[in-house]
Amino acid sequence: MGFTKIGYNICYMPWDSMSKRQRERPKVFGVSRNVFFLGWVSFLTDVSSEMIFNLLPLFLFNVLGAGTAVIGVIEGLGESAATMLKIASGWLSDRLGRRKGLTILGYVLSTVAKPFLYIANVWGAVLAVRLADRAGKGVRTSPRDALVADSTSVGEMGRSFGFHRALDSFGAVAGIAGAVAIVFLMQKGEWLLSKDTFQMAVIIGVIPAVLSVLLLIFFVHEHRALRPVREKATTALWRGFDKRFKIFLGIIVLFTLGNSANAFLILRAQNLGLSVLQILLLLGLFNLVYASISYPSGVLSDRLGRKALIVAGWAIYALTYLGFGLASASWHVIPLFVLYGLYYGAAEGATRAFVADMVPEESRGTAYGLYHGVVGLAILPASVIAGVLWQVISPAAPFYFGAAMAGAAMVGFALLIRR
Image (cartoon, rainbow, N blue to C red; front, side, top):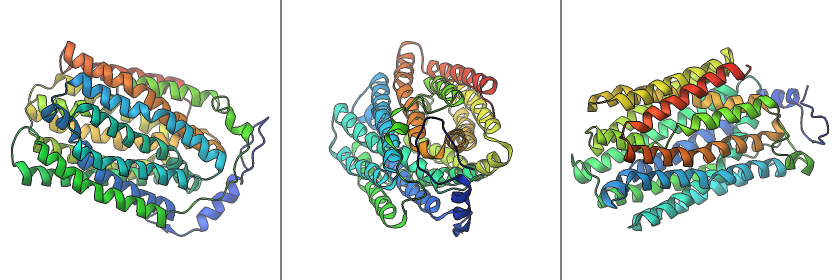
């Protein structure tokens, strides 16, 4: 039996019919063909992005001389610039009844932007490139997540999003391994990043980004179970969802206010005495842990429910950030990056699957747009707050703040959100 909404005039295929069709399609490693190839698209994209952007805060700090407040603004604006695009592209994918074209456009924008980092010599130029790259992410994210959900049968959302997150993270591991190789070959054990090393990472990192676009174009197919929804269903962006989803978005904002850009984790590691090469190895460890548990965590969320996985993940996050605040020696960072990977693996896929659980299928694009949009809106103040706390109080202060926000969000989610 399909979803019904009083007062909406919506054209769609019922859940039962869609699920039967999806079950009849051949699966690859337990997921649909679309989900399988979308996972590899994300894998290649993350190879590129992690090879380049994990070095970006060190490039800004070590080469261009930008302060942490500036880095916070760049990272925050980069995420927030994508916010309206995430909402608009999700809404538009529902309006058109198509996801692939917008997904392709987003990946192309990010791919075209990256080479310009090679010639960036002031932080303003880096900001422009970062905004363009994040704009591409904003265009593609909501339609892509909706396409993953559309290509998945009922009861397997956690599996599909877990698979997608796992390949995304394994791509990050490969990208960081590439960055490690470049740093090692270019500057051995030097503590500060050099300009030539960063430029080499940009040149090599563009290649997998181009391959990801080609894979998306030729191997991922549009899901046609739904016809385009009518205007009345898409204009009421906020009114079209129930109270639980709205409370969930409010709690996500609270959590994100303490979830500053990962650039501050990198700077904290360097602050505690780690070299560029050591930091990259730790980031690889983080992504390896993240990738390894994403898929089994997604399957577990299908069986036990999303709420327990999300609450557990946020609890781990709060402990991790508290640990970064208390850390006083370089070796402390190693178990903290492992814990950070556990948080992402437990919570990230389950959270995205939880969005699909809460909303009608014909409104998924809009729902993912709102979800990613509120995260993007909160990232800017979160990163600015972190940068100011670092400079005004101490390098530990942003992490104490993040732990407190995560703890409050965890309690709110546990008490206010029904299963």
